[in-house]
Image (cartoon, rainbow, N blue to C red; front, side, top):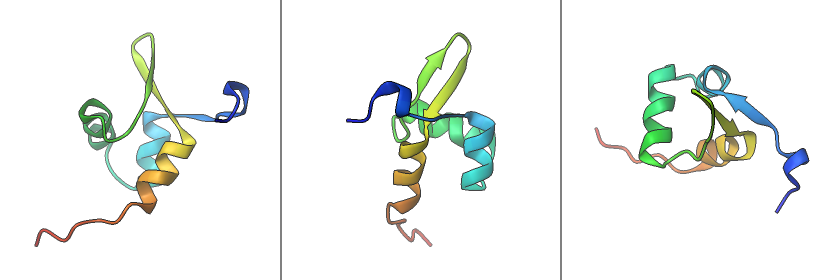
Length: 63
C-alpha cells in the first residue's frame, strides 16, 4: 500500500468534475460505500486512486 504522504486526496467538487457528474452524485457514491472517502471535519476527501478505479469499472447497461 502506498505511504499516506504519497496519496493525493481530491475534494468532492474535483471528483465531480473528473467524473462529469454532480456533487450530489459523488456524495451518494461516498455514502453508499461505492467510493471510499475520508471525512475531514464537515467535508470529504476521496483518494485519487479510488476515482481512477471507479472510472475503470465496467458500467451495466440498464436501458
